[in-house]
Length: 510
Image 1 (cartoon, rainbow, N blue to C red):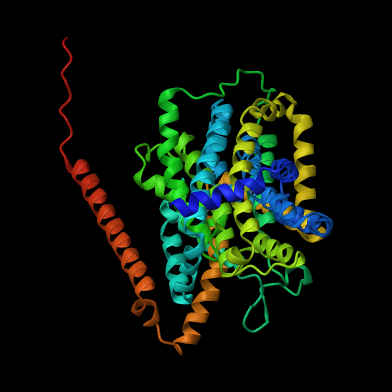
Image 2 (image 1 turned 135 degrees about the horizontal axis):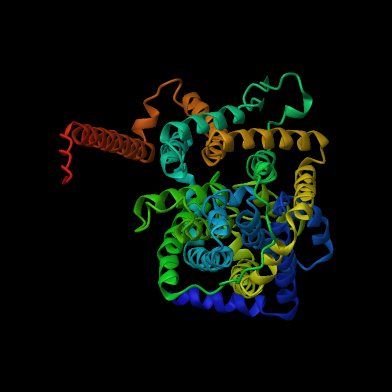
């Protein structure tokens, strides 16, 4: 404990220099703006700014790039909550966050997201400070079979993510899995379901699906509606009441724990953490029956998990030298550009960089809270624009965001196609969130499933003989059994109520 406090004090002595504070402020501000723009994300921004790191001091450059990454996690919830246009890490925010907007609680939803993100970031920084030297080794305990079991747990949780019937949710999840198979097979190199179209060789981008199924579909639905959308002129109730504030804390803490854990694991990160936190809240929250209709818990847990996973994803990078996602791969490139090799010896070789970066995350966390929460009123000014003017601008930014990922016009056409599909899903009352879950988990499940069978020479026993995968499989069996028993009990209860004799009619007095 004392050693960690000394190390943090050492880190703050480097992070609180005027130069590093300036780079932290630049990174957080740019990250927030990047998160606000539909489709644009930290991956494209960091890749564009990576050449600048040659002329910026090492600690300042890495603090700035890290600020862009976790700052974008703050900003992306704004477009998801206000306009239902998500990034990959704010898909779940569209469910309850946008419903709160429709109820006139936009200010409360954005405050909840901002404050919960602050809690998630703070918890993750504590995890990073105390456990980074040893916790990164946890990733070495997970083999392909363990990842398969973990992905199956994610599929089992689809009943918590969907807001409609379980059958429809499973069907949408399977559609997402099938979409994830489009592209080049990682093992054989053969192209699958590309219809000989070259731009599908790398598969369908998650940005295209997210913007299409949520953003463009919502715009099309609003244009198709006969109701005239008037500009927003109501009062903004930004500060929650004490009873509302007390509802934020438990969900934010649960999401922080989930996000901190999943951020450590390769293949985890903010995108999966938001689904896991949302599923947990739908299971254990005091208001679990209301989640999905626009309540605080549906925003708080996923926002905290999103931010926590963004912070703890630095653990495997800095303590093992293994990036867990594309953004961390760019961060690894930035480390190498500056002549630093992340790994077990990094803390001992460059303590000022490691602890300075950790301390700057907390400074950035405070800066983002101060920057975003007071500015919520300005974010809401977008509703004062008539929708006839607003929707072309939204479509314009959607096209820019989609194009910026690969600089490919075909991605815009794909986004438009998924916009039409998303609109049809809305007409058929099908929820698109399980589709995104299946699309994210499907390729990872397939890749690790094939690896596990190669290692076991085709034996399925590997999924039950390993301690981690065996425990997760047992958990899945218990959950499915519990679901079946609950379904049978509800069906029996409905039959019992239906078989009860109808009450005799009351005779009316003549």
